Length: 579
Image (cartoon, rainbow, N blue to C red; front, side, top):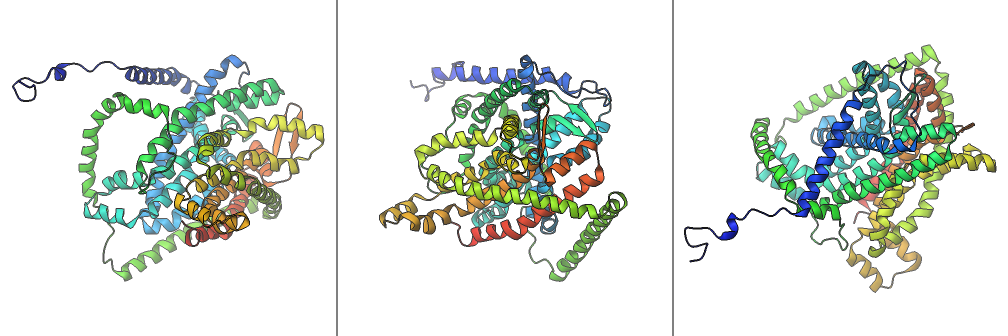
């Protein structure tokens, strides 16, 4: 009698599943991760007194593994915080019409504030929040890294929400999904690909500010946390090029390891949420993701969470369905808009008046004129950088992106180059500038480019690789080549991606100016004329009025450039050059 037809099950049903090597590997990795976190926990809450806190760390290379783990932990905690902030902030801006008018301009301003600007305000607050504990300084460092990640991710997720296909929106209404269900079943999946890619770029950009967030020089005090950034800062201060070289080698291992073990699996996994009908010719692959998919451990760990998800679905149902109100009275809506706009305007005017009065009573309003003149010098460097990066990297990015075989090998290299903290190379550049007699007024353009140019290359590669195959074949069959092919086909096709890379590179260049306009190595200290150097000096000595003036002026430059130039290019890309 067959096992499926009698009263006894087949023999294989009673057989225990064999222990597979992939399960052993995944369990070992999880145990090692948990053990490492438990070992680090006591160090995070160590006793701390601001007056007796160490101002530097040991440059003994044997400490580098420990420093690397501490830096990685800060980076990933900041990444988790950035994802939570992105989900909350972007959803509020996209779903609440009145908040959209406030939250987006605020996000523009936050994106323009340099990392040192946040540190100058938050370090003392976090130290006072956790008195006598190192946890306060750790939180300040993590918050600084968070500010280098969150804004770009929030913009990416916001634009994915406001550009959702109408068919998906109507399906959510027909299925009568709650707001909670719509968020996790529609909003997050539809925005996962841009969120992962921008998260990867933001994570790479945050490496650049690792030294500033771990070796903190604010308000006339110097604090140092164990980490790769503080190790590099200590080696640079001692003039130890060998130590800097070791730090660079370890950072290369860290960046490559994070890309292979975390970001490549995330990129490959996010492809499951692609909604286009024809699949990509070269889909991302990841050995780590393949191992996780073959293992039963993720499924076993996720099984206890399913009842929790069902309970949350039931608990959030009273908050209403995911549909906008229909037939809302126009008069009531306009009256609410007037009152809301009035309240916001009063707050903005009051805040601006208090800030101006504070500056007038301390350094005088004439300081704004001086800061704007310095900002013009930094703005000129940003423009030169963008023009040079465009001329150099757009043709190379198009060549890489339109050749799938080249893309497969070149894109991971570009990701690593974009993620590498270029300020680790600044000591070598300083030695070269001193030897060659090059002024930092010009050399800082090169230093800023080391951290900002990759955004243009990366986005152009992504745009060129996304050009539909049928359009390429049509151009080939019509024998369109040379300048006409570039002018009529290639440049319009990659233009939207170039604009995205350009605005990201511009923001990165302004932030990079903070560390590129003041560099040092051993006894050599170079300073450029610019707004970045102005903010750096004011932060180091704790001059709050000048810090405020510098941040306000930089925010005005960045927001004005975004509104007057980049937003217009965005609109042009969406209306004329969208594929």
